[in-house]
Image (cartoon, rainbow, N blue to C red; front, side, top):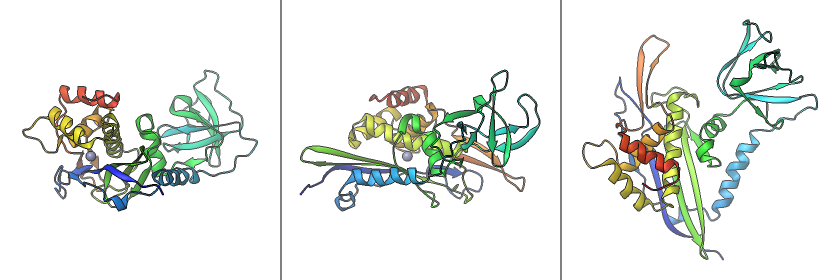
Length: 303
Ligand SMILES: [Zn+2]
């Protein structure tokens, strides 16, 4: 009968974004360390839980592939479907993370476009704006979760993602051992809504910044081999003691996000013409020292 003895479990929550203008959520107000997960909350078979997550992701992708499809391409960003191989006439706008097929895989004479079918239209898209994907990839738009997963795949591939609309963003890791064998369960939870209640596109700069921040926590956990106390000491030391809006772990997750290219502040123009300013994370400034430390964590090293 295997027994799982928790070594440590920690959940870190991110304020994620705060609304600057109406001040509904002050910056960094919900910085929280959720603390120990009770032993009962640890799954009896963490690997089983992970497998379910992965199956869930795979299950979203089940579309039959016909023999006549020669190749499939997935947009990296929103892009135009042109009516011809070289002209500028637009047939449609193809959203980001959208998989299209081609029966011809015909390239333009200068090699910059490929002929594809998008919904009922046949046209041409720019090759630099798409990636060739396996034929087993389902046609159409990726799910929110799959887009987020894709955005962080370079650093956090395979980490299960949960989504909800309750504006909770966090990354958790729990460690258990049985007969000297350690099991680690990592998870990222993301909100599909903004703090002001509207739908958040998974590729919006705010969403990407939050995804990077949470993936940054996973990288922190890994660099410190899930020794959360050692991680906290190290991050607080890098961040310093005075004038801080969040603890070192949170601020450094912001700096990791920044080092990965996240935009941490932005302004939206709303449909009524007014503007809204958002801040992702805790709003502190990442100094060159902080960013140098962030890059070490990204490389898998301790600071
Ligand atoms: Zn955080």
